[in-house]
Length: 305
Image: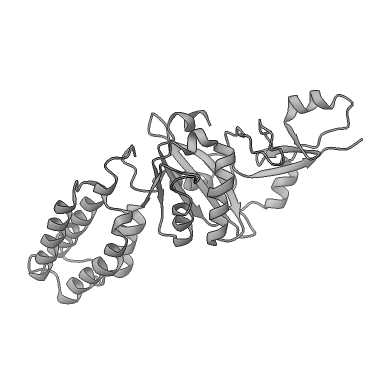
């Protein structure tokens, strides 16, 4: 949380599968610290990836766990191509919303690289060297639109130059069906969403050059590989059972509360790693909750005796 408070300007969010055996998705928010290292800002298991689930995460969960002092300073939120995910965020931006000063951007890797591989018709097998160089030229043009173009005129000129070059056969090495598929891909997959990824639309933001969801992807990769000590494919019910702290009956309830966590309606509030959260969520009032690990909240019952 301290690192997030220092660098909340650019956030990456991503959803991954295969982290627990009931096939729930793991939603992760990540930022970067001063050393350009990934920082886990919040994680939550979500039952299914519908828009209303993401909307509640952005609308309520993030606002409560981070606090307005952080959400008001978020400048950029980078998401993958999941429509439910980025629409939910966009619906929580603007005046009197969770992220009043934030702008959304699509990930370059998901929007351009993966989309190009899935939609452009390339020759089977290993392409000849000249053809591969021509394809690399196309990729370089598209990448410059995400990272380098500084105004609309430059973007239009670059796009027109690429189309003209393709119509000449891409240096006379690309086949006609490949040229047509590239032009169709630009027209149908990139241009309709260009306001969500063009670099010059975000030059005025403090974004730390964030144009991909690589930081949240790296956290997922580290977790699934076991490098951070978390075993992927875990049983969520057993995970809660082993990590909820049962509070023993005690007459010194206030002392136990101060030592172990906070009380809400007779329950001890802890996070998913068994650590208590420093803060109280009282009815009718939302107070900031400090948590350095997770958005996931589980409860351990306090014995009324």
